[in-house]
Image 1 (cartoon, rainbow, N blue to C red):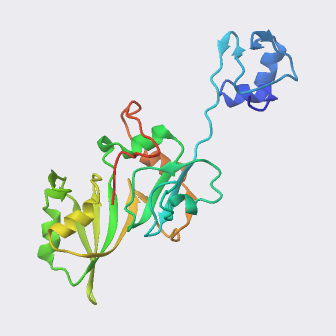
Image 2: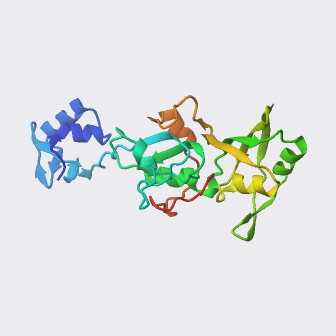
Image 3: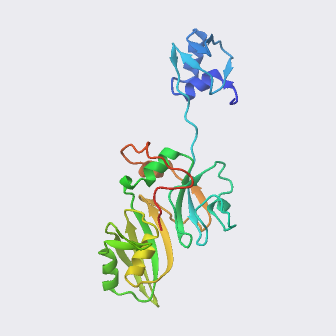
Amino acid sequence: MSESVKLQKLIADAGVCSRRAAERLIDGGAVTVNGALAKLGDRACADDDICVNGAHIKRAPAARTYIMLNKPAGVVTTMSDESGRRCVADYLGGVGARVYPIGRLDMYSDGLLLLTDDGDFANEVSHPRGQKEKVYRVTLIGDVSDGALDALRHLDAIDINGVITPISPCGVELLSRGSGETVAAITLHEGKNRQIRRMCESVGLKISRLTRVSIGGVELGSLPLGKWRRLTQDEIASLMRAGDTKNDKITETEGISRDE
């Protein structure tokens, strides 16, 4: 059973009215707890049956956790690993909640990874119908030509384990070129398994570093490698989308999209 608190607090937390107004309702005989008439000074638990003027109050929603992690390369996107490899759980000290990753980030890639304990939020962010743009900073070996970058832009299929799989067009922006490397920003609207690596391989390009820098407009920014922070309310709101995917369940071990 959950810890008991002042009855007026539970009523206020449920959004019925203010604590002071709740005290007046209790004093006026309008509140019952588990069928018994309540009185001022009573305490109750969140799982008690509390009625105000005969109507059951809705329990206050549990606080949820939404964070971003700047995942280092060489770390697997799981909360545990039977092979003893480093996993994202090793970098989540102090979070104070049992969060899990939303989607995947390839073991050899680094950058932005979202984690939460809110299944509905995870579904909305991950579901393919959400079409959340994901931007990656890709460092390629060599001075890559404009023609090769253009080939990436127009690629419409990749080989996934021997199966030719259609892909949506991606954005490719040249950021810099020189000193034996080329840096580009690649924007995906979907998350096929190791998609960017397979795309580059198909046009003869080699990747030296792959970093995810944003999801749905939420930026990694200056968050240090291996560190995490909580999402702001504005960031949470920007990741939510219209539409109902609550029947499309997601679990800690699956993840809807398998991103780079």
